[in-house]
Image (tube, rainbow, N blue to C red; front, top):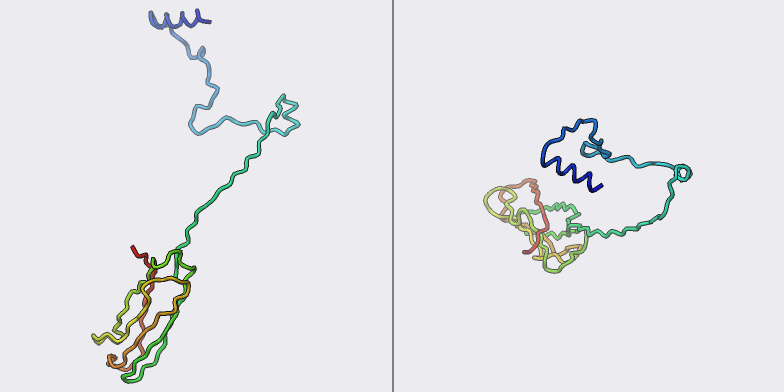
Length: 170
């Protein structure tokens, strides 16, 4: 075998030997990318008849652990209805309910889209929202709205949407 290899090597260096396409061996693997050779699918009885024998069988058990993070969210809707007569001052408490207890104390804050509101658009602040600085429990009860009737210039029914989000103190 070494002599034949040596002869091919020498003949390749000294001169070219023309090879025809029929003499080249055909590849035994798929030529195109992405194709895989077929795996025989036979029943155990057919495998024994075909000469196949199962030597080892392994059962693999995998354990996976996931770290799932559920963000802190406000799950309550708050509707405040109040009747303020003349120069009356009204204080209306309300609760905010979260989806879970905060993991860290003095880390999360409530952020309101507005805390000082001019409900009748006359240029004077007449409604103020008060809330604790940090969220430390699932139900926040220390919130209230203070309406000053003396700053409301026109009678009427007023409504305002305020958006509340949870913010991280960093």
